[in-house]
Length: 305
Ligand SMILES: Nc1nc2c(ncn2[C@@H]2O[C@H](COP(=O)(O)OP(=O)(O)O)[C@@H](O)[C@H]2O)c(=O)[nH]1
Ligand SMILES: [Mg+2]
Image 1 (cartoon, rainbow, N blue to C red):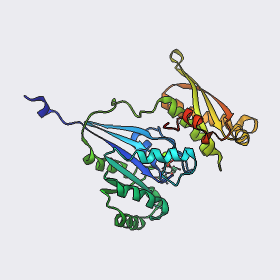
Image 2 (cartoon, rainbow, N blue to C red):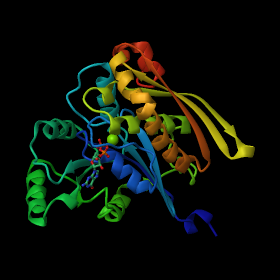
Image 3 (cartoon, rainbow, N blue to C red):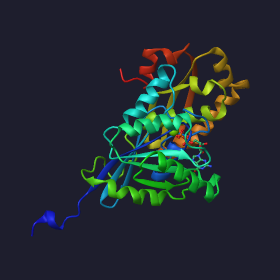
Image 4 (cartoon, rainbow, N blue to C red):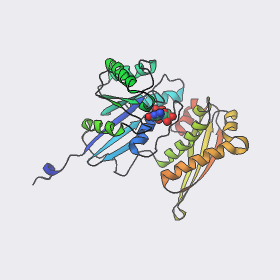
């Protein structure tokens, strides 16, 4: 018997997750994967790079691409971020456009994204996130308003945080996959190296514990990552780059309290990620205005040049 006639086709496809800063894109990626690979915070512009999340199901694979929020970008780092997001929308099979249920549509930011989508031929789902924050009538009103503005292939209300609607969303994506290769091994969650996620987890703790301009002027680099298999231990040294002496003072904290807290919180997440014990040593370094410096941007992974 002809083998290909009996074999099920393997389905795969790329799906970009886009939206304004802070709408819950990275929270959604983590929810889909059931593991934390993308950092999140209640501050805009937490995500700086494109992050691939691999979702496997029997007979198929969906490659989700989490992106930085699309906004009016000022400065080299912000421009890199927005370029990453816009670049992620070409060459995908589907775009998930995330908006917030408790926000009103038609805001400048959303209209900018919708104009980009007008120009693209990729099908788009409207994903209304944070439905835990609103009552159903508001949701219906929102769906109506957005649907008048753009022809969405599907509208799915979800709560990325609580998980409501996410299985339905994944189900709705299936018809948009095509027969294709298994791009990544079935046990892989992301294409990002462990070192990158480790640096991100450190940055997340700083984002969450600092305010004003400090979170945006922080870059983290893992300098060494040493596996001591016989001791079930990983020894990690990372440098936190800041833009000002005053920022360093705040991140180190009184008697080193802040940096210790950041280190402890990051270590717990890293241990969960790696499944081993972790020794994490953090070093804070001032690099004046690094986010405007091409060489430093390259070193920290924020450059395509
Ligand atoms: N109430 C509520 N908050 C959410 C939900 N999804 C994400 N958030 C919060 O929204 C903030 C931004 O999330 P994040 O994933 O970093 O947004 P991103 O910038 O779009 O990647 C965080 O504080 C999340 O905890 C949700 O479904 N409900
Ligand atoms: Mg994000």
